[in-house]
Length: 378
Image (cartoon, rainbow, N blue to C red; front, side, top):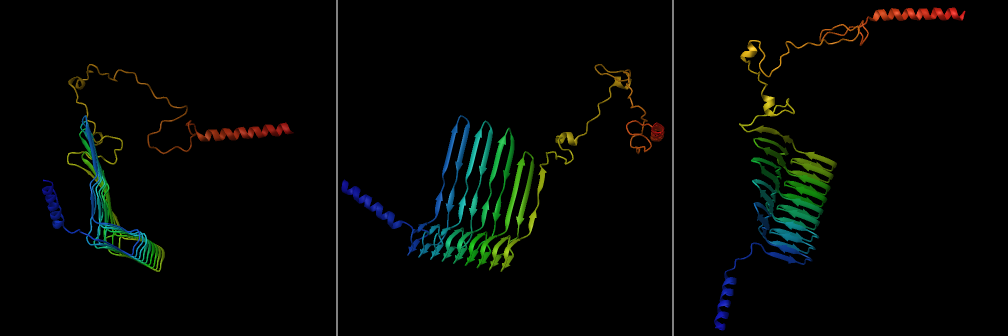
């Protein structure tokens, strides 16, 4: 019996290894020190709980997927993930195939719920190559670094964080999607270079930052009202910096040669908008502090009752016909001026008395005083 079990186990192992498929990517390290290589990676961590009508859940599926082999030759401290990464004669290089991650969370209790998500993708086409470089970081694909130091390269990137909630039957939401387009970054004999998106090229330069076309757009909605503010920078094209120091290029179609402290950007477009659903009432810009109904609907006149038409006061309402009227008191000397009339120049302010009278009175008192002083002095 024991012999039969051993024979069955051996047969199963042989069939398993005989029918196993080849790996999608091979890892090769030649003459290298401290190399870390791994093929495609896919993980989906998640957690959740539910108790007494209250629930919560979180998850963060993440994957690194590439094609081709990972190769490290005469390199030190090379880290390669996915596939299609090559490091030759480099130190401290980190290379990764396209990355995708979609963390999310949700919670709910008593007919109320809330959700949040932040999917992030770093893509790109092609392989990553680092040759004779130090401290090169390459993400996505289509990145090349030769004889450079402190280089960060990333393919096209997209992120779309969003939140939403439902409270007492009303839904609210907000999102901020952003993306950098393009593919293909190249750095040659340069130091301190950051390249994002694609179509970026830098040679014999220092402290260069390059980015492909950028698109971002914040948006929010509540009930039947929504607002958005999409913004774009550039429309594609290539960025190029040669023999330059401190060059910043965004959007594409930018060129810098032998320059210092250069900032270049593509066209910037923004188109904010706001609106409501057909069943909602828009809020007027000139009615700040009022509700939409009070701002849009004037106060209706009260209907006239038969008693009011006949001149007889209705029960519960007071009339002002028999009430004594108090006259408005005016300051001393003030004359009644029509509203909107120009000010009178021949009257003293706050009194309304004639100005000429007080001028003559003042002159008389002055002459009398001088005469009295002269007599006493003699």
